[in-house]
Length: 297
Image (cartoon, rainbow, N blue to C red; front, side):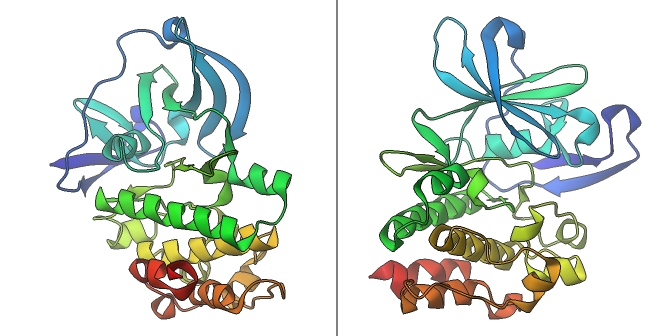
């Protein structure tokens, strides 16, 4: 099955078209809800904003229950896909592809309006994003960081099994339960299909968070999905244990110079260093991270 992706600034002004091969596992191709968004859901406070849209907390009318509601403006969508006969942001296609994936947020419903798409996603109770969790709790203990890190890797690999690469792994894109430390990977706005991520155009079509970006993107504008994911995981682990990201400038990212607290174990420092090697081909392999001594003890 092929998914048609349209590179354009708006649906009305299409100028080019790219064919993106989907993975072998089909996603559930259901159309947008026939009911109006307003008749089914209510929106409350804003909880996030990005380059492509705004996220609000919401609830379903009558039934209650908290949901996350994301408005994606059509004129800001850069990558398009197709569900049935409908041209949609690729993010919708990818969320359908990873539906019921382990520790990945589920798309509940979606709607097309004149100027935007509205995505309704699950919002686990008693949860916050990992950025706010670290801000509230402070630097994490190694055992806590290890538990969260293991679950994040499983979520990423689960997506890869469905043929989807997230490309924006960071603390703000991980929901965590305050009590159980269960996590959900969120925000697939920068994601793409793993099968097409090695083509030249997709390697250069990357818009993840700058300070989590790997050196090869900064210097050559090339994003390699697996080494790039490993780099982001290294930044994430450092952030959990230090309370801040390791690099704040392009020069710092490219130098790869690390300074780590004395109370971080030697074996953990080794894993961080293995993930954050400036050369992508010298980093630890994504599939080998779980076997590293820090995670396998």
